[in-house]
Image 1: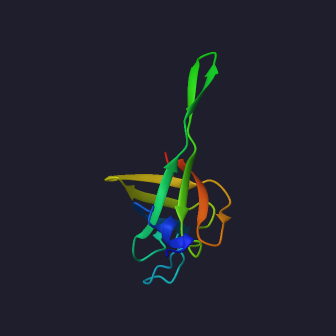
Image 2: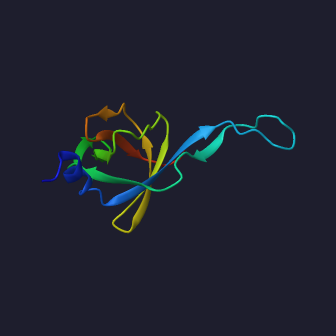
Length: 120
């Protein structure tokens, strides 16, 4: 019989890489440079991105489409606020930014994401 975690992980159809801004020391000068994006995982991490139904909010100048995007990933993975998460799922690669506090459960965690326009 499969455990609940195995069942959840069987739904993971994508992989992701996680990037955080980190101050990198210049080996030649010994000085710390401005923070740069650094990939924090060595191997792609199995995950799943889920999209909740979009809704349109009507405004005077037109409608705005709102979409809830959620990342499902193992609970041991630590993703800090402000991280960039690049997900490859269904043959497409999309960059997101971490936009919520993780909801950590025994067998998985859930993180709300936003599409990344510019990582600043």
